[in-house]
Length: 193
Image 1: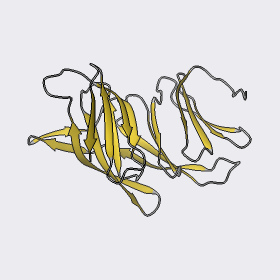
Image 2: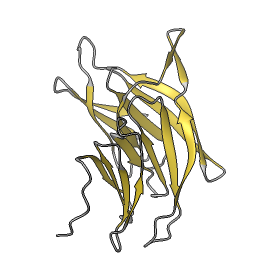
Image 3: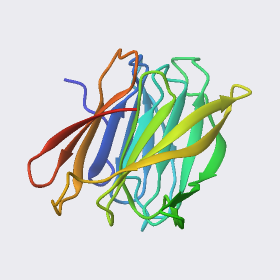
């Protein structure tokens, strides 16, 4: 086995879909991006009290979205496929948009629990630690480096059930995005978006 350098305890680990990169976030606030040809890494420093628990790669592995605990924004990094080197740049810091539900403005904000992007890169599902709903955003790539996020809808738990979303997953290779949500009381729901 290949042993990778350990700094603190790992709390998030994600391979890019093309397998070229490995994202690793640690409880001490350190983030490492590994390239998988020679297993070299780039260390990204973060506030030691702020941890990245949620991250998601775009299906083409060119973009990594992540959040930092207690921040109401997503950080978007673009990767330029020059392996075995890591060539990534922060393209934008995205504040989550306001969303109106029942004529009352709400925001997609708070501590993000999970992020997942559909294969087409047009839908982003977000669950929050303090909410029992899942936010769905429409994503559009502008000029090959910047993303626009528009509120689409909230998904609430099944009727008369007080629970929270614990796992999110999009069906791969789906013509129309199909989101699967596992709820804390055991129910699994499917949602066409």
